[in-house]
Amino acid sequence: MTCRAVAVGVGHYLPERVVPNAVFESRIDTSDEWIRARSGIERRHFAAEGETTSQMAIAAARAALADAGLEPKDIDAVIVATSTPDLTFPSAATMVQAGLGLKTGFAFDVQAVCAGFVYALSTANAFITSGQANRVLVIGAETFSRIMDWEDRTTSVLFGDGAGALIMERQEATGGSEDRGILSVDLHSDGEFRDLLYVDGGVSATQSTGVLRMQGREVFRHAVEKLAETAHLALQKAGLGADDVDWIVPHQANLRIISRTAQKMGVGMDRVVVTVQDHGNTSAASIPLALSVGVARGQIKPGDLLVTEAIGGGLAWGAVVLRW
Ligand code: UT7
Picture 1 (cartoon, helix red, strand yellow):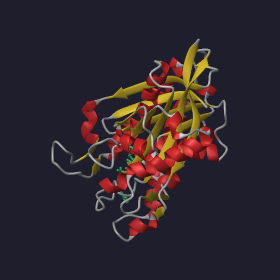
Picture 2 (tube, protein in one colour):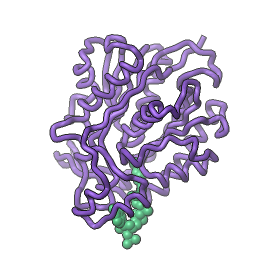
Picture 3 (tube, protein in one colour):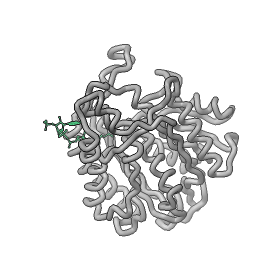
């Protein structure tokens, strides 16, 4: 008998403050029209002063625990995907562990920028299928508003803050593609492209936090090509094809990337969960946020076949195929 990592709970948290595109018009040379047309973004949430990544992660985790009908003590590992932890160390995950009052198990962060949640999910899958953990709390949480250059119109209008969480549980399975849970994983990175999207500060190099720098057009080009390819490879590994997909749950960076990737995959936009208009790009938080919103909207239902795919700084990219 084999086993799978099955999603048994999902939840999210968005900070209270909603910032519409119009707010940027008074500060930089941009317009609501440009932002909507080029990115699909209409508004985003920004964390309140003093509100941290781990606080948002804890709120999302509590929502996922409530959804699963579980208590913190039922969790034996916490993985947080983030590039914007509260402090350089310890990990945001240990702060979540303490915040939930967990005294057992282990917790650590995964840093793969916008691909972080896909990497964290595949890490949870490895722990669960190898028997090292039974229930893993997997969170994507970011405060990208803290690493923006507010003078840079090419980046500052694109990002937002938030957190989403999944609880993955070890369950017996047949090993076939009809199983619930994670069916396949496909991960890649290529450090040759590290200068396309990076933060220009850090502990070792500058002893400062730095701000995000991006060559947007170049990242866009890589994104469409690499996302469609990784999604195809992940489906192939699961013995499935595009026709089997109920929902693509993509990283929410740009509506044009999302729709072109879906088009390349041969999947209609009526089978894509889109939240970018409301959240902007929340980096590692975007996929769990979209999963949680997709379930709340009644789009994603038990038994649906999902493909998640993401790309970000590194470049790092990948896809996970799972049955909800
Ligand atoms: O999550 C990690 C992965 N990140 C991404 O996936 C982001 C990928 N890139 C993108 O989403 C898009 O490239 C952007 C939304 C960043 C930019 O859209 P684009 O269609 O690629 O525009 P562009 O960079 O080619 O710029 C077109 C024009 C430029 O003006 P010129 O040189 O043609 O005169 C920019 O200066 O738009 C200008 N522009 C703006 N205009 C008004 C750039 N940003 C703005 C702005 N408002 N905020």
